[in-house]
Every structure is written in C-alpha cells, then in structure tokens.
Amino acid sequence: MEPDVRAVQAAEGLPAQAGPPERRLGESLHFALRNPKLLIGGGVVGALLLTGLVAPLFVQEGPNVYVGPQAQAPSAQYWLGTTNFGQDVFAQFVFGLRSTFLVGLVGGGIAAVVGMVVGFTAGYRGGLVDEVLNMITNVVLVLPALVVLIIAAAYLQARGIALQGLFIGLTSWPWVARAVRAQTLSLATRDFVDLARLSGRRAHSIVFREIAPNMSSYLFMTFILLFGGAILIAAGLDFIGLGPTEGVSLGLMMHNAVTWGALQLGMWWWFVPPGLGITAIVGSLYIMNVGLDEVFNPKLREL
Image (cartoon, rainbow, N blue to C red; front, side, top):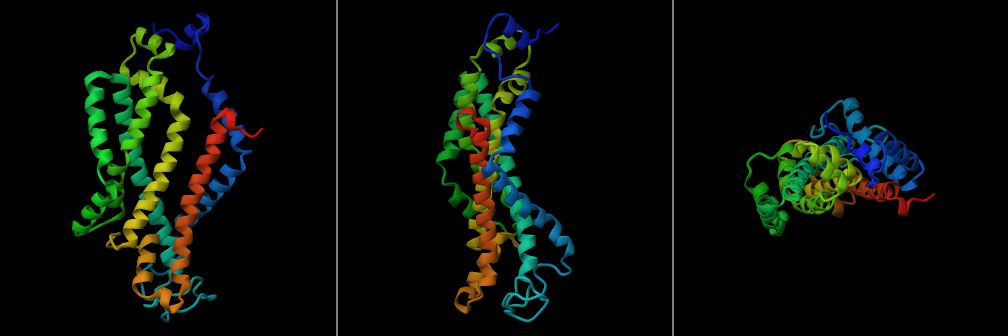
C-alpha cells in the first residue's frame, strides 16, 4: 500500500507542506476578504465581465447595424451616442467587452497551459529533456513576439477572436516556462518529493499532487498576468487595424474612431469608453495581482 507522504514526514520530523488544503483555503479566503486591493480589483473586473455577458442580451440591434442619426451625442435613447455611420456605441462597447474577455481567456489560458507543461517537464525530468526544452524556450523568448503577431495577422485573410488568442498564447508562454521550471527544480529536491518517488508513484502524479499544489498561488497569479497581457496585446493589434475582420472589440472601436476622425470632430463618446474599458480591465487585474500577492505571502499580509 502506498504510504502517506505527509504522515511519514511528520513521523520522521521532516518539514511538512503548508497544511491540509482545507486549512490553507480557509486561511487564504480569510485574508482575501480583508484585502482592499483584491476586493476593489475583483469588483471592477467582475462588474465589467457581467456587463459584457448580460448587456448584449438586451441590445436589440447588432454592434455594426446602422440604427440612428450619425454622430449623435449621448442621450436617453443612445446612452453612449452613435458613430459617424449611425452605429450604437453602447452596443459596440458591450459586445467589445465580451470579445476582450474572450481573447484574454483564450490567449492567457493557452500561454499558461503551454508554459506550465514545459516548465514542469523540464524542471522535474532534468537532463537532456531539460536542455532541449530550455533551448526551445530560449528560441521563442528571443523572437520579437509583437512583430511575429503583426506579420501573422497581416497575412491572414480571415481573423477572429479565437485565432487571435491562439497566436497570442503561442508567443507568450516562454517566461512562464522559465519561472515554473526554476521553482520545480527547487521543489523537486525536497524531502516530500523524494518520499513520493520512493513510494513508487509516477512522475505526473508527483508533479500534479505534490509539486503543483505548492505552487498553486503562484500559478494563479501568473494566469492573471497572462490574462491582462493578452488583452493588451490584442488591443494593440486591433488599434493598428489587425483585429477581427468580423465582429467588434474595444481596440477595434478605438481604431475606427481614430480612422474616421472622432478626435478632430470632438466625438469623445466614440473613443473614451473603449479606452477606459481596456484601462479598467487591465489595471484592475494588476491591482488584483498585488492583492493576491499580499494574501498568499504571509510577510506582506496586512493584519
């Protein structure tokens, strides 16, 4: 029968892990509910996400449908006014929020999965596997990711949110792999991992049941950074006209506003909402990340 690693650690006086998962979760939740940075950042992100999910259900016309008078200022009928072509800016904004969160989820999720798989494999296996994966990581790391994305997007005939997120994810994972590899190398030499090896457990079981849980807070914070980074990269591509060929996004709204002279015509309602939306989402994600660092790091907790 497979021995209980934590019981063996306690019996032999070895340093145990941070405690039962229930206790660690309860402790983290206790400090999370008292951290103003996490509450404010999470509240803003949650409110914008809810708006992007729910508000489009109540919009009668699509974001690119000509619904009213051209260049109409905000009013009771058109909450954020209309564009030069009579499109409802509010409809574009709420649909753009949905697209922004989707590209962040796809791009950040792909980058997180690829980076963690490469990092865990290289750090735990070591040897030739580590050298090969580290070489691939370094090659991708030195590539000018934004230039690669611009070239790829420019030559695609049809561009969508999912495809944009895929390209962003495949160019954003190297720094995650390096960081995860470094921490895995450190944890792989700990006593509880050695005991798990002696018990005959497989490598993937040791990684996902012993090493990964001890990095769970760091992995979660890494995903938040990747999520925000994917949104910024996508907004940059959209702003230079390499966004989705169908649909709408916050970056594409800003691109259209600049292209059709909203700045010169004083149509602030066309470019201010998407700019504030991107700033609020990314800024709140980074504030959340600072708050999570204080929650998970006992030295930073504000008692």
